[in-house]
Length: 123
Image 1: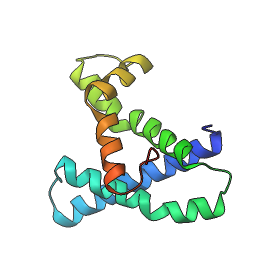
Image 2 (image 1 turned 180 degrees about the vertical axis):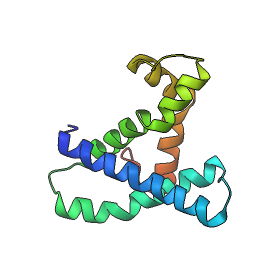
Image 3 (image 1 turned 135 degrees about the horizontal axis):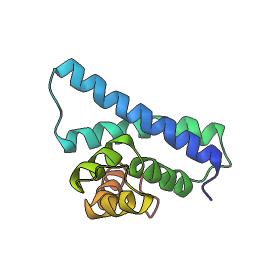
Image 4 (image 1 turned 60 degrees about the horizontal axis):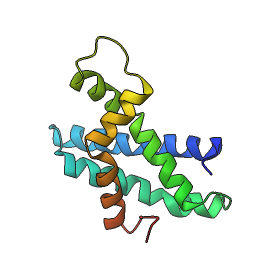
């Protein structure tokens, strides 16, 4: 079950992953390719898993995985691209955000990336 606590932790992990990407781009003084962003994002999250599961024994891996995916879906980046790609002159609805996330293949990329890092809840 994705609890409010799990969502808060996922939101902070999302922020941490995005910070790591921004730092790398600042150091390199150029934007990173999407696959490199994905790797940095997942690595930032993976680095915190031991601490989270040690301190928050009530949180289940699958619940945190789902909460992370929800945070990615509702991230500023996905909302921005939903608005841009759908040529909206308003904020996108929840349904548009979800559909865009799915249509762009993000759930598969998310699962594949976590599987590569041995962080897939289905294994």
